[in-house]
Structures are given as C-alpha cells and as structure tokens.
Amino acid sequence: MFDAQERGRKGIIYLAGPYSHSDPAIREGRYTLITAVAAQLISKGWIVFSPLTMTHPIDKLLAGHSETLGSEYWVNFDEAFMEFCSEIVVVMVDGWDKSSGVAREIKFFRDRGRPVHHILYKEDALIDF
Image (cartoon, helix red, strand yellow):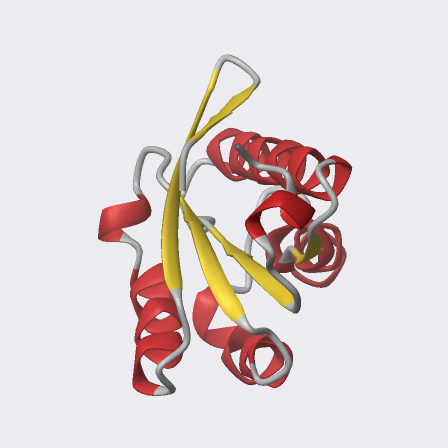
C-alpha cells in the first residue's frame, strides 16, 4: 500500500508533524517518531524531506538542549524547502491538529494546489494515506 512505484508517485514528500512543546521529552519523542515515519516511507521508495529530522538537532544546538527556538524561527527555512516538494504528508500524532506550524504547512500546500495527505503511525506501522 505504501510502495511508491505502485502508487505511481514522483516528486518529494514534505513530512509534517507537530514539534513545539514546553516539555523537551515530548519534543524528543516527536522527533524520534517523525524520523521513524520518514525512514519507513524512504524504505518504500519515497523521496522524503523531513524538516523535524533535519532541524531538531540544530534547534537543540542553537537553543540549548532543554529549550527550543520555536516554529516561527524556522518558517523561512521550511518554506524554502516546501517550494521544492510536490506534496505534504501530515503524521497524525498527538498535537498535530493543534500545531500552528502544521497548519501553516498545510495552508502552504493547499494554496499552491498541491496534494495534502494524512497518515497514522501506530506501533511502528504506517496506516494509510
């Protein structure tokens, strides 16, 4: 079901999920989960850009291990990459529907007429999108 060639898709997926939270353990958990989803999609043949996977370690270095720069800091950075992505896949984990960053990313893709997909990730398995 998640095989890229079977679905006939080409292009780059922008993988979105919530990140910002006052608890550093929650941010770390979100980073780990989104990175695992990216790895699974990549293993199925998809080309994936995962901003959380890329920026979390940098955010920790710039802000300190228990702090975060926040999603507003990364807006220009994210949008530069979104310009090159053909679609967005939103990982529906706790907080995705309350995240201003995820809402902004979805709006970016919808405003440009690009596909918006949602997936669940439970117990190390991707569930439909």
